Length: 268
Image 1: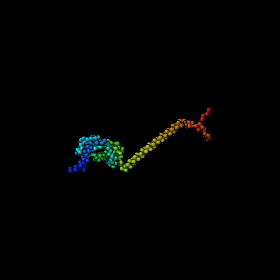
Image 2: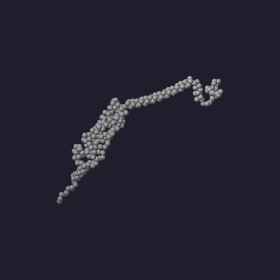
Image 3: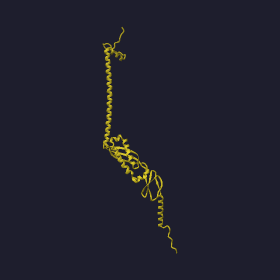
Image 4: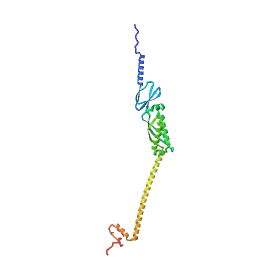
């Protein structure tokens, strides 16, 4: 009698088959890599950074040999608070927002030299240093009155600083300047003093104009009196002439024993 045959699908063979299928599927899917929108793929060969940068879309690589690290190239935002000393040694707190992106074509170089944390390693210290160096050129009041100049210098310096590391600065926003309470109170007091000075100057100007008007009026009255005196010296009847100019045509209701104030000529 022949010995019984062993079944082909033994537990060992089943496990081996499952493992083989898994490996085949893993190798199959590892051939393809997808670089999503707004990113670049840094191609590595056994950990070595290659010169080739993978663009968006589907790519074929060698499994095990190659791997891909993604680098975001979209516009990113970095916000921070910076404390610096002004030219007149007053501490000022500044809030900044920097919009930037890395240069896509050299994302492999950035990954190799800096890594993914380029914001913490390069951008953050650069912003702090630039703000301190530019703020030190202005006194506290100039930071307010020359805000556009301050921003322009920070922009230019930061753009130059980060561009050397292949990071492109798009915009820099100075959202706020915060000064010590005593300085803010001094500014308010100064503005109040300016307003009071302007009011005093306006009042003085008004008083001066009114005085000039009064002087002109007094001069006019004096000139009028002088002319009347001259006319009286030439003709005593001049007063009667003035009275006739001002008479309303109505005789007084009662008169004393004196002669009328106007001599009305009568016919002979």
